[in-house]
Length: 171
Image (cartoon, rainbow, N blue to C red; front, side):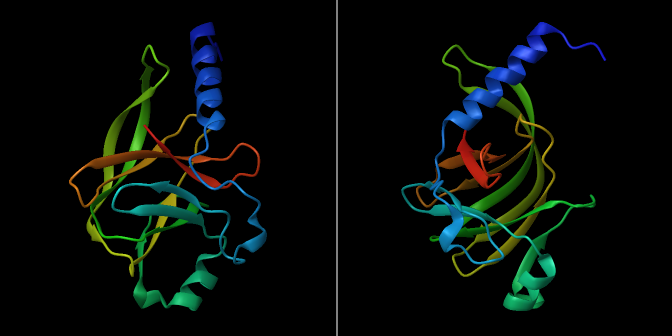
């Protein structure tokens, strides 16, 4: 396989940019439930959206009731399973496939987006599981939603380079 310098540089810069900023509480998972890893959270004006890793779908569904959980599944073996929660209503939750596009002059990463799943409304009482596949260091999954003031928020879903917990990173 022929890897050119530009591709290697982009990969290195992307990895450094993604893992140097943590928008979440990256504290140890000492106070976590056994079915969830440390939360990744992003505070918006109207909603705080979090993702938690779920280690056992079966145990999670047994605990919360399969009929009460909305599962956004993919047809791939061994997906990363995340629980998404919000403390305020959000609209137009989109699960996105991301493709790296470029970095701008300020080092901000840009992606092409392809909508995979759309959920018109999510409320704090909703229990949502999302299946994702993570390929390497450059994010390939994202979420977007519209908060109460009408602003569309976009985040890539990344794994913390130190402990592998999921993180949301604004882009």
